[in-house]
Length: 349
Image (cartoon, rainbow, N blue to C red):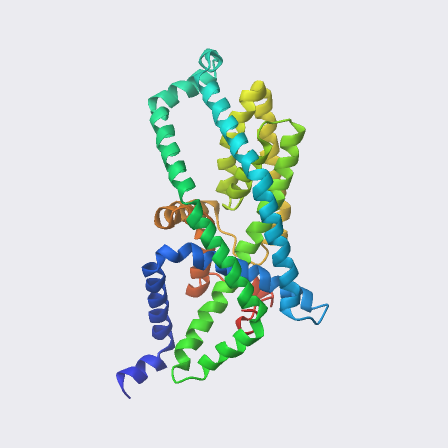
């Protein structure tokens, strides 16, 4: 038996080698990571929608997706035209109010806040704000590239899902090719990836939407300034598991204190605690019953490491990737596989 035949026969070594090669390929194309991830997320969600509708009505995917995508484009155009100017205006107002609050005599005279003020002075917060502002400007200048990635991902997901049966039929031809073992292993990892990454992202999106709605309602009742900007911030931070709630508490508390002192800070803390309890005891059991729940220590360690390796994307996809490798290593399988709810690659993607 040749070395090649021995390698093909050794399934464990073969799959480990392929996984390393796939990771290397993604690393080499890391500049396109946003396009890959956005395409996967959009495709996964649209496939789930199509399958859910087809359970009740036998209808072609194109007839489901075309009206939906047209509606999404119309809503996005309307939102950009009406709310982006308000978002920019409210964000600038929040920054101005926080700057005035930071420089105010009230902050220095407060017995409790003076401690915080002295600490901010020690860490040279002014220079850090300037650095953050510079980074923000750089992010704003890259909005065009981000928008292009979102647009391309949106279009690619539409074409894939609208022709999903043809795509699956074409993909199965690779399994019977001369190198069928290679594509069978890639298919194996694809199934694992979908049953971890896809499900976790879908659940986290649902949790982020619910958290944002609850928070926005509370902010409106409290008559907080810049509700649109704060809601956008809460939604983005809600995509970060566990840590997002804690991170969002800091700017919300500063805004609340600038509005009505410690009383509003207490209200904000109570609101965050209540929403976090809803997420922990209701949303997570409902939306994340198909994923591995990590201890909080591992969650924060993974977030720190993934942010260092992948930047802002790491805060969102770090946990799903970690869960994916746990499943690959056989450390702990996701709940969905145990309950028989595994998403079959050959059928859904």
